Image (cartoon, rainbow over all chains, first blue to last red; front, side):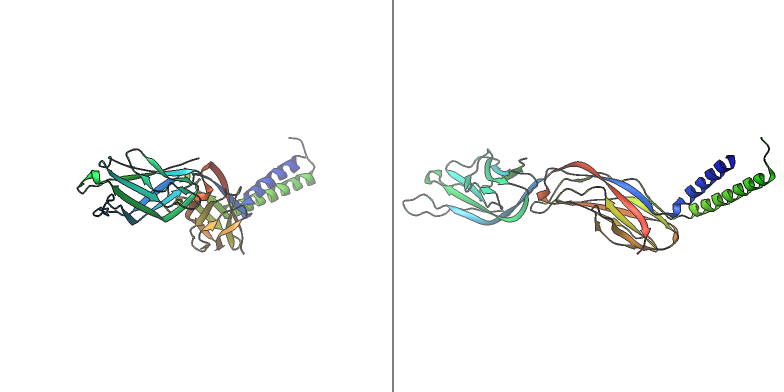
Amino acid sequence: MKMTHTAALLLALGFTAARGAMAQTSTQTVTFEVDPINQIAVTGTPSLLINAASAGNAPTSVTATGSSWAVTTNQSGAKVTASIASAMPTGVTLSVQLGAPSGATSAGLKALGTTAVDVVTGITKLNASSLALTYQLDATAAAGVVSSSTRVVTYTVTGGV
Amino acid sequence: MSEQPGCLLVVTRLWRVAAAALLVAGSRLGAQATRLDVSGSPGNLAVTSAPAGFQPAAVIDASTQYSVRVHGGTKKITAELSAPMPAGVSLTVTLSAVSGGTSAGPVTLDTTPRDVVVNLSNGADLSATITYQLTTTTEAGIVAAQSRTVTFSLVNYP
């Protein structure tokens, strides 16, 4: 019996040492995540000049096309808001209209102020670029002559859920 | 120690000699054995940004390595996941080639073993980089942190 035990032990050790000749495996643990992503970009530096009117009417509004915007979000129900850093002169209105990406809704032409306004809503899990971006400048006759001025328009995309 | 009959003593000694010989042979074989090891696990792969208008930016980790030693015929390395990735999320792995082997390049991982290095011939210990890339789409949405086990296997080739 003692002989059998000894032999079995040595055989087991031998086979253990030889086990390296068999198929080998090795493992790694990969941890991953995707965080909320909301990115917006605009292109173009539009210039708007009012310099005409039809007699008897307010000065003729002007529009600036050629700008565009792009968005990426991996959330549902995201929206884009727009605002300007300082108020427009009295009687002068700067408005903006953003084309909506697929499945979203444009608010149409919206007057800009220092309080952010929704310009596109319902943006859900998409990436889109070269979307239309149009500015419009209106002025009343009472506004008088307004010297050249600039405003920075800030667009913000905020995630839904 | 109790006395044993002569023939039994001889048989006992023969067993011991045979077993010892097997142990030595096994140890030598083990020292030369085919072997596959990896150097730990990669860091957390977190997708956090995207250029506006484009899909989220992929993230890459190339911080780990594998080492392999082949004896007894041509081998290949396969890789597989413990569970499928979430919809819209893709994990690829690239094992850079070691001398005597051929990398399959970036391989998208799933629960089926996929060849990542093939045609590995007999040789000494060799090491090379493991590169992971995590890609996702906007449609995948937010994905909470989770893990998958990647199992690399060294098997006969082809």
